[in-house]
Image (cartoon, rainbow, N blue to C red; front, side, top):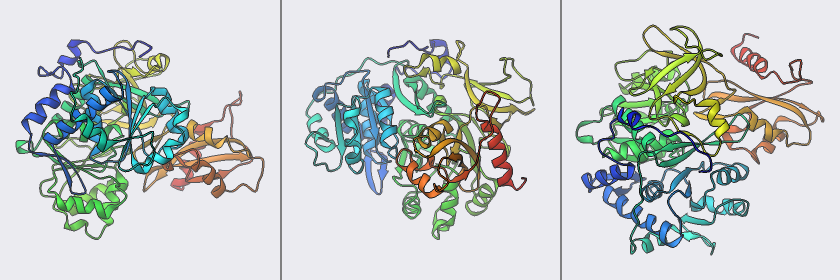
Length: 534
């Protein structure tokens, strides 16, 4: 890394007790030896044991180092849905000291070019269905090697299966790792429209694993079976499937396409699950399926909602039909795990719960003064699970992370008299669509590329299906430009969930006395209209 970023002291790491492990690679060795014959991952019935994860990740790790010439500290991007190859690639990187760059398979060319170049990724492990479209932008990026999971007719690409075969005959070099070694670059939206890589260390993820385990105690004999629709490229899906469930001897039933509700119901009927994580739209979709009531929920102890506020009607119906509760959590890419949770036996509707163990929360005003219970201000968090900074962005790091390790979330809320935290607003203009962060500036930057657009502003409005939807206010040169045409234009540069659902054409947009568009005024207007108060 070009620019120095803070690391955690041993005292901070001792808060979560590293149990003698030097890194996640040590925990991996223990888990694969202990749970050798158990099934670790499945995908549509294709099962992978702990022993197979150990051997296959070692083979791929050997290929990355010996055949491709990568060295510890190099970045490897992973771009695929939830399939068994994902954890193989992830552990191959973690065991050899390579740094994972989790990449959204739905990203457009513009988004991919930025993330590959910003991270400086040298290698890409990608699903075959995505490889052809990604190939067209590789000459604009730092990527030197592409490994394809599945079939490829590109002679410059490497076959995943052949890499495993060749690597199996080689020795995987062991990396010198510790809890301060960088494990993952988890990209998150940026207020400037450019995503930033949150640097998460082995220690961050180890702490997040322990926090998750403490929040939701494992079932007897660690026989956890987690249905895993949350994408692994998302920090929560990554933590739950690749780290927490796996390292504690559980099985993750990977769901490649959570929109295929019928297929997911099939997996839930195949396995007698104990855990599930999702968002409102997923829970709603499951309950609407005709076979939902055939799923056995008798062993489920941890059903977790995140990404966006849990809707009470959905929670109530779920509880009535399954006999289980959905527990709500709140976290960010920068915190690796949830930083608050409505845990079993400690719930309060309308809040995001209490702070998790080993994590401190405070609320401050604009001057940085700590506020009292009931007073609204910016929520800040500190703990061994909080990132150590943004990749190669010291200025951006300094804006959100102080020298004492306090991270400014950008969310406005307060702590009530019982220690429960309620989110009331966002200091940032971020919009959350189905659990995914969308920054208005990124949407606007693409819209401004249309030759007929004079000015625009994107805001979030409540949506019963996705939590929030994007509403775009736009002023154009040509009154014939319509919403459908502008949405089609956006599809060329934005992932589907970032495309404005509502478009309002205006003669002018409200501005401050210095000409800055007043986004908050537009957001307040939009929300009033949606709620019927306008």
